[in-house]
Picture 1 (cartoon, rainbow, N blue to C red):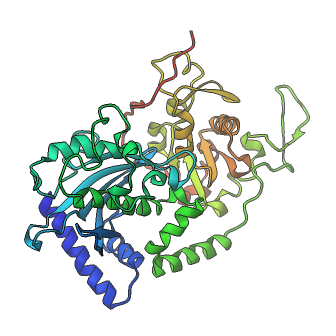
Picture 2: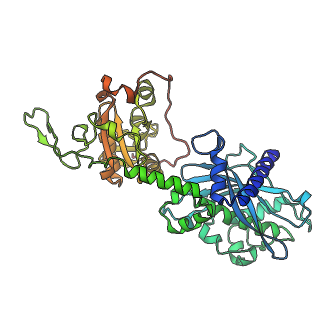
Length: 445
């Protein structure tokens, strides 16, 4: 792993030199790194980045170094990172080994970077215990005889649970009040420099974390946070800015979306009715949808819309509309008995119009699957599951002016839809549906 990381660092250092000569921004460098090879979202490798890192040595002199992020992975409510940085420069370069930390930073409910917290910090195993994701690069033992184990036991736990707001105020560990360092079980007798006679490494661990939080700000999760936006400027890319402007222009040229319900349409409100009722706002049935088999084609493949098929994977694999992703409604989202039967995995039970969360994380998962900052098209086989899904979204606080029931696969069987339908089974699927690691709310007795 060390050789792999060093190879990445060497390539990044060379690139940074070329970038400086060509007056490229750091954002251009990172865009090139992730765009020139099979790296980044939708590819075979996770995104990587070069991030500015303000190193401080023993006498207190500061130098601009770069830390390197060879791994980023966005989980449900946190992001996993590996970050390599130079911890100590007090020796000749031939023994200045780079440290690699495995860090998990949260994605807080508030959407504010200041509230993001350190979930995990490790220079050894990752949080799963399956991978040696970290490597400590300073001397062991330290000059005063203290060993790495003391660093792990005494210093690293101080950071777990700390937010960006907690640590961004500190420049060195001497800025940390003694009472803040000793707070916590088993820490009462520790001093701020309990594990080593030198403060170079702990100072730069602190600075590495601050640098990583600044990079954390670039995640789209923090798009609405003005403070995070200000921190992103160092990562701005001239090419990225141009691409974003082009994307905005392209979206502006797309057809304007109508309101979800077409009130010029009519439907039979009750079984046995002979006269049709005009469609009203808030009617989630496919008959009243403003976008249907008649006009869906002109609203496909937009950048501001997520397209969701609520059928199970088995049905989706047999035939589906191009551009739609599958989120199984019956298997994962809703079962009327899920809140009463602990063997059922769905997120909600009860009634679609008044859904009962099954897990403490149900709403958070729902927001991850159906992003609130996007327009959402939902479909199923005939439109019924889509209508119930819309009831759930309404009950849980979604803006229903941005959610559309475009009907079901049964409405798109004609030859005129052949170019937007995949009707050759690509794979055979046998699916088992479950959630792991969620906190189940006790079933009602």
